[in-house]
Structure formats: structure tokens, C-alpha cells
Image (cartoon, rainbow, N blue to C red):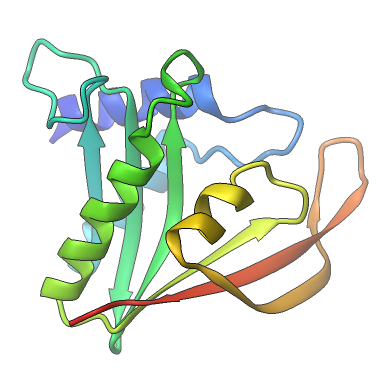
Length: 153
């Protein structure tokens, strides 16, 4: 597990722009995984599960509960973007969430996040907005948008 967290954190540190403060710390990731309802998925640059010697190119982190699964984080290392890895991660999340009994996926993101097109193409739709929810490092407030995606049984 420690090796997987190392790989996940390598992607996290490469993928998230510090200006937005969206990256989690190692401690936050480890603490979230203590609970039995938080799951992660790592993928290599070819979309497969990375073996011990292969670095991760992307990951997802989600939390399951009450017929829903919330996508907490999804990231692809910048050097591996625009190759379909985000969709592969969403496909894997959809399948594993459905097996855990989820009927829909949820996510929240800052307004203006370029990943919105990935999510809407996958089938996510807006269900709400939280004005001035995120505070960036420069103090600017940014709205949060919440999305849902119905899973097929």
C-alpha cells in the first residue's frame, strides 16, 4: 500500500496546479483510506494497472456510501494527458462503483476547471452550484459545481 501511495502522490504533485490548492497531502490521502469505504485506482501510461516497477500515470480516489460514490480526486500526470487515460479511470470507477452497489457517481469541482469537458462527455450533468465555495491561494473565491452521473446496472 505504501508503494501505491507513493505513486499516487507522484501523480498528485505533478497534476495539480498549486495556485488552486486542490492537491491533497499524503496525510489526507492516507487518512481517507483508513476507512473501509474509500477506494483508489492507479493506471500506467498504457491504461493498465502499474506493476511494482512501473510509475502511475493517473489515479482516482472515491468514497462510497448509500447507493452513491463520490469522486474525490481524479488526476492524470500532465505528460500523459490527452491520451484517454481520464476516460479509462472513469470507466474503471463506474464499473467498480456499480459492483459496490452505487447507482450514481457524484463529484464537485471548481468552476472553470478544464476537466469539466471530460466529465460531461462521460455523462455527468450539473446538479448544483455553491457560490464562493473555494478560496484560492491569492484569496480569490471561486464557485463549486456539483455533478452527478447515473450508472447503468
